[in-house]
Length: 364
Picture 1 (cartoon, rainbow, N blue to C red):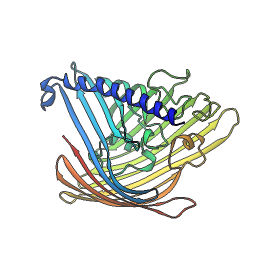
Picture 2 (cartoon, helix red, strand yellow):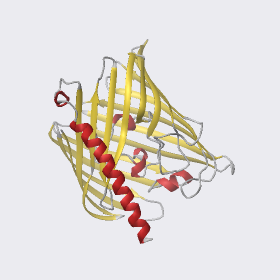
Picture 3 (cartoon, rainbow, N blue to C red):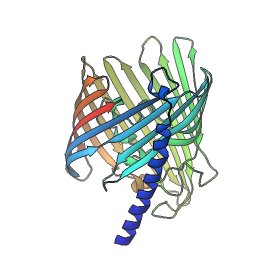
Picture 4 (cartoon, rainbow, N blue to C red):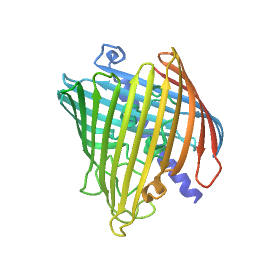
């Protein structure tokens, strides 16, 4: 067993080293104009360092967060490129390197843009409004429902395929925006995103419709859906039979200085085709923040129930929780924020877990 672990670490180290060697030259070859605000390409770097004190699991220590590299540019008029690479520390002391987004977009008109590549799934609000840089978020932590797949999340928050996006004005001072994506869905291995090929012919479909009343700037509401059918896999990596997934969500968001109000509800159905075992699961949260000059106090309440989901049982590290948190963010500069956050997590069948997080988030 020890020999197997050593081999796994060696393979992982070689893979990460190769990934870094591929990424580093690419960044070094970016022309000098890429670092200028008026250049053809632009590189943003996001990072964070956390100090967490928690009693379940017992934690007392510092943690390097994500180093998020976001490269954007326009190779030709009407075409936009985006590459987001994240380096993140793991508990074993190693660094994981992952391409979180890699896409090319052609803007035909306001009502139609076509994107190909790996993007954030257009489900809900938080997943596409806040990407991987902690500097972008008011809170120090993401809502439980919208944690990323490699952080114990329950939802498919990335997709690799083709997506359409557009917006138009409607009578009555309304603006509507749509998103429609067709992509690789879940595969035979519940712990792996399908970024190279698909294990079956069925493709996942994601759709979202958002409405914005022009008379209330910063306000929007929307609905999303995600449909997929995953092929059977061999346990423990797979569930052993074809799985159908139907996800529905609704959101309401108001972001207009000094207010931020976010509320989302997600429910999804998991059906195992052969055994006909069925489960409905859900996640919801509401977050309120108010900025007073450079200080932003915030609070969030959330609930997650995925205990009956056999898929989440293999991928998520938390299946049921009722949480309340409050914190404060201080923007020392446009590129530097300090956050302090306290949370109480009610876990079914055990006493409440307390957590205190201090975070330094930055960008340059």
